[in-house]
Length: 232
Image (cartoon, rainbow, N blue to C red; front, side, top):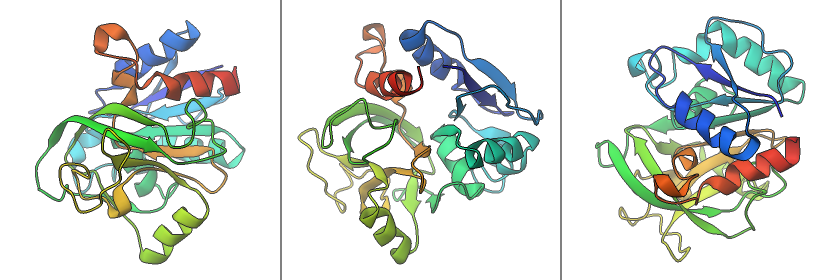
């Protein structure tokens, strides 16, 4: 499996993401500078977390217009797989590769703490490492993670099984209005979504930061083992 990780000015989670892929594949992903416009030869492109371009205008808005994003869009249109985590999720929505938008957290505070996610999306390499309904712990670190979309789009995501992950309690209970569970106020507790063909996934928390016991646990490892098993 050949993986590329896109680096924008202000990206700060590229090495965390690279280490997660090293754990499952033993190989170092290729780092892709945002000004290049060629991503040939890759199986997966990852947009990691951070503060691309300082989050000016809106989080991910400027990065969505970097030269590499045209190549990423072509890559996805040809059937390539794309994963966006945190700022990467924001960039994918700004680039209209995923529906919806990420607004300021409901409490207007930056959240840096663990949360629990329920696995809901089906038929996707990004959820294949878990069973449907599994719950796992993941760190969150964002100020603009409040997912929103038009009501008809939310209904469509639900109906098509494209809600990949949802905020929940440690026991798996989803509580939209509970600020201790749905901490950023996301519509329908949505933490991650899939594209129509299920080859593009965005999520806000950071599974890459729980892939080794030395980091505090391996709850996030199934994301990467599932991808590895699917793409080899």
